[in-house]
Every structure is written in C-alpha cells, then in structure tokens.
Image (tube, rainbow, N blue to C red; front, side, top):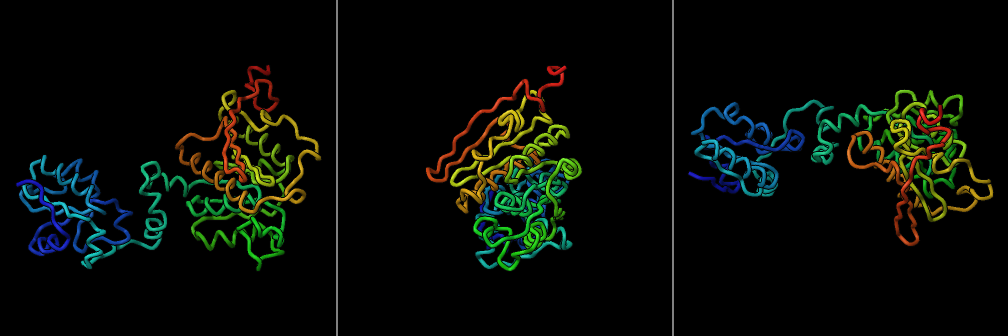
Length: 366
C-alpha cells in the first residue's frame, strides 16, 4: 500500500480509530512536548530493529517528528521492511501544535527535565549530543581572572553547562570595570570579583558549581589551583601570571587557552605543549621573556574598547569547550589576532621552539 502523507488532523482521526502514533524524535526533543498518545521511539532505534518495537507488520503505523523529514525516512525504512500501513505526518509536531491538537509533556524528574530543556540546542548537535553534554557537566575549568576576558568566558562556559568553574582573582569590583567586565553590576561595586562572579553565574545556571578563589596566582599556589582541572583559561592582565600559568600547564600536561587585549586589538591561542611536547608550542615559544614595561602598558594606562574583551573571551570559551569535547581543530600552533577597527582576523602560524627551556622535548635537552 505505499507510504501515506497525512495532515496532523487526519493522523489524529486515524489514531482515535486505533492506529499507533510514534514520535521518532530524540528524548530531549520530546521533553518540551509531544503529540498526545504518541509512543516515543527514537529514529535510530526504530530503524535498527523495527520488529522489536512493532511485532505486528500489519498494524497501521503513524510516524511524527519535528517537521516531517525524519518521519518520512523512517516510514520508507519500515515499508521496505514489510510494514503494510505506514504514514508520515506532514509538518510534524510543529504543525501539530499550530493546528491546536493536544500536546503532552513526558513525566520527568526535575533535574532531568531541566537538563533536556536547558541544553536542548546542544543535544541536537551530533558533535555534542547527550554524551558530550555529560562530558561538559563532568568537566572542571580553571579561569584565572574575573575581569574583561574572564567575564564572557565564564558566562558562556556556565551557560554551556561546564560542571565546575574554579575562578581565581584577588581584585574587587570597581565602577571603571563595568564598561567591559559584564559579570559584575553596579550594586556589587566593592565586592570581591570572584564572589560577584559566583552571584552572576549562579543566577544564570544554578547547576554549575563555582569555586571562588579570592587569591592572586603565585608560584606557591599555581599547581594547587590547577589540581583536577581539565582546561586552564588565561584571563590575566600581566606577563608574570601568564608565564606562571604557561610553565605550570606544561609541567602538569594541561591545555592553556590564552587571550590578551589592548585598545582595539586582541589575540587568542591555545598552548598545549604539556600534552604535545615537541609538536605544539608553549607561550614561551612565542614570547621567550617579558617585554620591557614601557612596551607593555596595561589597559588602565592605554584604554580598551569595552566590547573587545567580549570578542576575545568568547573565543577563549569556544576553544575551551572544543577541548573538553575533543572536537574540531584547536588554535594550538596558531595565534589568532583581531583588529576591531578594521574588523579583520589574521592568523599567524606558531612552531614549537626546539630550544625552549620549558617545553623542548626532553631528549633534546639531555
């Protein structure tokens, strides 16, 4: 009998007459609502073993998804497997809702419902899915600095569901920060930045644990701060801290997501020499020693366009998420420069320095 194409209203009538309605979307898609009376069986499961779910090939089967494409593909697969009465619902759940037909939400506990709804757009991505989202939930990130770079990075990492954010900063919120440090608010001027950050991030995503460390990174505490973390994000504003972070990351085998801004320009990279010794450079391969102070003024001395740290911090968060998920190509071995005035990105290739005192292959230094 071939595949039938039904409107939601027609399908509802057939369902009332005894036809089986199956929603082939994933569980996280059905969490926000599915056609009343529909049985949820994901597309892959149904196609892989239709007989397990549909033992009677003569029964009338109605298939629905979000828009109609997946249900039609499943209908074709079932027809090829010998099912005689198969129909796909045109327009899917979207049209079902638009037509005012009854909708129900599956019974889920509060935590599960929050997970499926909050991260629904991530769960749709094949590169993330539920497995990847659970990886993010189990991940731990050290963010050094809760200022211009740390603000957007922390916001997006928390929004993405990174389970633990350890934020280290010894400064307090100043009104001059608010032009670019979006974690903070006027009402929290004078508060420790890490406490202000914890307040903002908790309001955004209560499921993220924020470890607020009110301390400056030093040689005495840097390795302790990195304990058990998966990725380190450099949101510092001084060279001394950058070298401390770089050297510790190489020793401990942690990837370091670097960012820096000044006036209208910024740069970002990933230094992963600790895990890829001899293959990827470290920060010292790019800057073997700090420049003289007069050649490296900070933002307080030269100024910075308020949105610029947002761009660079966002890129840092992107790189961190990719590293945690193990997807895409990281910026390891590449320095990405951004000029806000010309709105141009420029990429510079970086090579490991074979004589680097920190990350050169051990054999080469023996």
